[in-house]
Image (tube, rainbow, N blue to C red; front, side, top):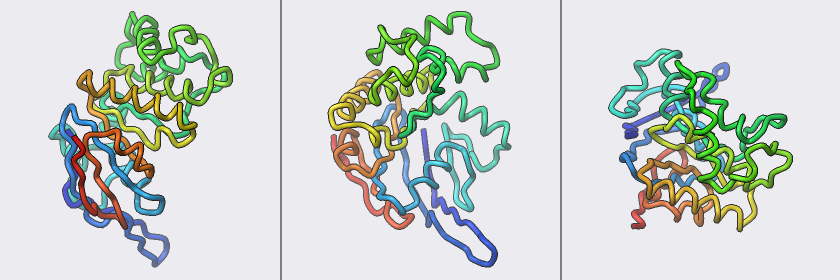
Length: 225
């Protein structure tokens, strides 16, 4: 599903070069639930941007479903982001004046053909994350945990190849965080590929395997189950 081979990423500001990713290599198989454990300042954000096709690596190869990401143009990368990757962010990224239902429907705006059953499909995903009675609520009327459930439903609406979650419990209390990780576990049992990036070892241990990132490199991997 995902294959990083010796991925590097550096940035240049004037005459100063900053190396962030320093030869990252790992794989995530189809149907796997993996976590990348990365403390702040270790290249986590840059890694996420490369994984999410928001930027290209400086060197190395990134294969997504056997497709070489480095050979694609901006339009092709945008298509992969919209159709192949479901994003879940720490800050939810919901439209404040829009209902839960319409937030979930948002990615379909960019679809080649808007599905005739879009509302029914979005309602079904909201029900699957426990928000059947709140589909018409706006984010301000929902708790943090409920907002993240809306974000997960939105990530599912295009039936993505992989769900990429960036610190999905970072803004939640312990109980809400546990509930969100249980949803990810359920999605994994349904056969979905999930990759969670986190600095919290307790969250990382919800996965089947942990990839530890340190100083822009993979330090080690740990198989949990």
